Length: 181
Image (cartoon, rainbow, N blue to C red):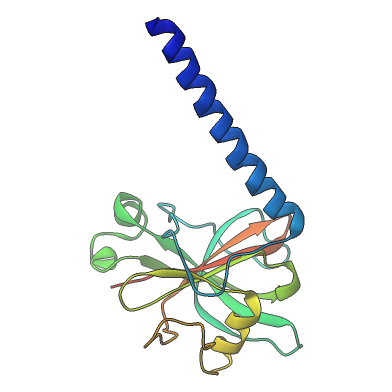
């Protein structure tokens, strides 16, 4: 009897998981997206970001403390530097340079033009360390100095915290603003 109940419970649990997965798949097929300024998880930060280079960037995560509008419509420009955290920071830059994280190497740097049409995920952070998912068009507006969308949380102000950029196949696909205290 006990085995039968366990199998019945497992079968029901499996059915619920399948139902949930099919609902998520149907949302993806219909192209549904999160609403602007939905709270999103805090992005994970590596112990060191990829080293910036001129030309096509290798797949990896890059750090920018400077994000600005590009010369061409539909672009942003990021000045990339290499950031270090925790023991990797002390190892690469020394304890003094890592008193306030992240430690940032001043050389090399590289400017990368970001085609916003290629960006899939964007998140920004507020003064309370909450991350919000926003469309890339909203990020462009914020970087240009415009006011946040009315859907932004009350009192939200776009800050100057740095961004972690993810590059795949040579293009920037994700921009996650990281709160630095």
